[in-house]
Image 1 (cartoon, one colour):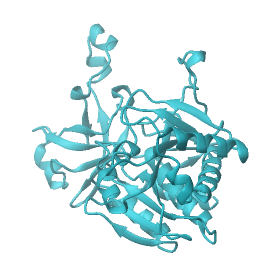
Image 2: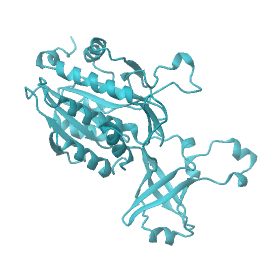
Image 3: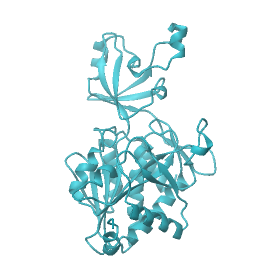
Length: 358
């Protein structure tokens, strides 16, 4: 594995569901500490400062550390564990997946189960299984056994999934938590690329917390950074899978990073979008465009900080987001790093002042 692959392996295999980001934060600290000045807000977002030729403008790069996961909700008398999701999950993705319950006594392995198929009626087999009918089995036969193992209500539950380099020449990767450890990896890679470069600004790389449950860390870290321009670095859902109409396949893995045209929380600053698109053309980085009609990125919170912050979300096209098996291409990551470094080199005080609407 090369340096980026090792970084992605560490980040994606670390645990860090919303509100429990300690594992991912430790990996970010390890890789950022040699590069920049580190701090942390009181909600847990990690903030790194990379000074350039000027203290301003202040450029914020946000990748959220939290991944979608679950929390222990109820332990029944037979020893089966019911759970609540932290972040959005498709119910059909859940059954038969192995998970780790992180307890005060250590990790406990379990599997998400449903009523066995051979105990279902014909009508039940035809229906999609609802999450309320799913449970986690750790091999116990009573509530007492579960509690003796260390499991308590409120404990975080994390999917089990290893980072895997898939078998083709295009460097395609499979892992959990690409949403949004890929954004965290972009923050690290961009700051590495800026080493020794005289950028006309100060760059703040931020690993935010609790994005999946309401972009909460973006609010608090924006207060700490007080940015002049902000970018969310994240995944972008693709349409290059069976079942998507050809005229709606707006994004494909391996065709370049994606500019998010809008989401439920933000319409990007138009002049900043033009700067990104024009810069990509200049340096021959292919771009895709993503209209996200659900959810929202960290810039949705950051762009409303103080009197307003020009913002934009840049996504790495990823298949099967919000599951434990995301798939993406390395080339899209590398192109995003190249593009963001070129944009940062352009964001001097005059250019940032010109981003305000006329």
